[in-house]
Image (cartoon, rainbow, N blue to C red; front, side, top):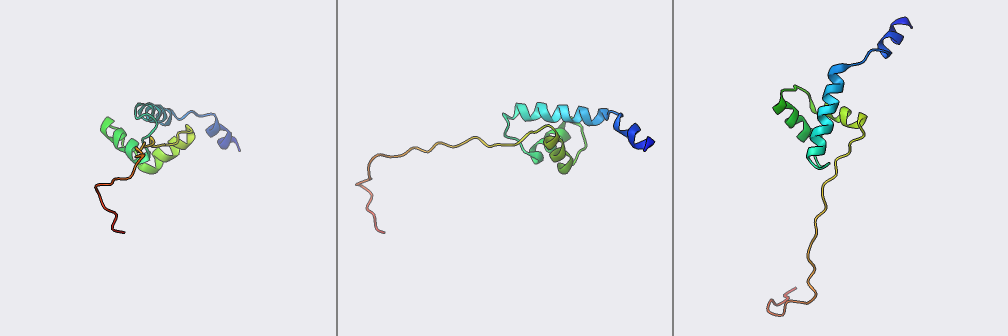
Length: 86
């Protein structure tokens, strides 16, 4: 019990630094980067981390990747010059 309490009070500084970097890179990607993309960016910065650790860091920081939506143009009329053969 003594050792468990001692571990709880210990701050994991390298993990906090990684979490800060993940948040910064996620914000720079406009909230669209996932764990694989962030892992690649972290490797470029010199942090040797795996995809699953990045995924856990994202979960700890409540970061969820979301891709921007696409807008498609609707035509208001049918194309008369192209015959419908179906």
